[in-house]
Length: 158
Image (cartoon, rainbow, N blue to C red; front, side):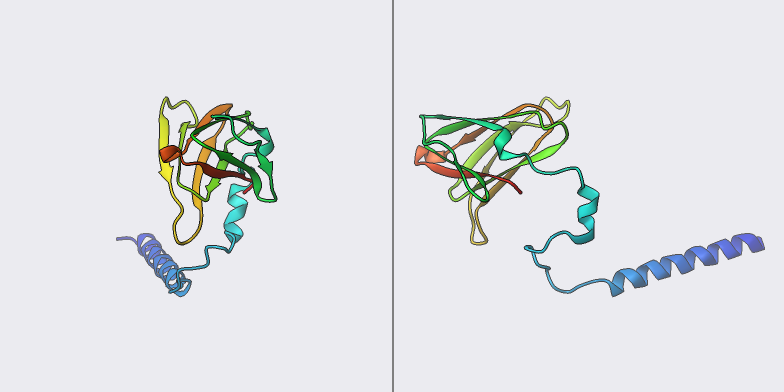
C-alpha cells in the first residue's frame, strides 16, 4: 500500500467516525411533537403544497347540503357518495381530506400510472380520519360513506 492510499484510508476512517459521533449526539429519545412543523425540512418541499379547496367541484348523491366554507377548508356533509372534480393544479399537489366519521376515498394515481387507489379511513383516539390524495392533473376523486349513514368530510387547506 502506498503512502497516498494510507492517507486516503485514514481520512475515510476519520470521516466515518465523525459522522457516527454526530449522528449519535443528535439522537433524541423522545417521540417528537407531531404538532410541530417539519422545521428546516420544509424548505425541501417548497412549491409542493395542498390543493386549494376552491378549485374542487363537488357533486353528491343523493343531493346533500351545499358545501360550507370554514377556516379549515370546505366541509361536505353527504349520505352515500360524493364526486370531487379537482381542477388541474399545474404541479404535484396533495388533496387533504379530514373526516369526523369513517369514509372511503378512490382516486387515480398521479403520473402516467394506470392505477386506481382506494382507501378506507376512520378517526381514532388521536384525531379525525385523514386521507391524502396526490394530484398532478385534473382528477376525479370519489368519496363513499360506508353504510350510507352520512359522512362529514373537510377538504382541508393544509
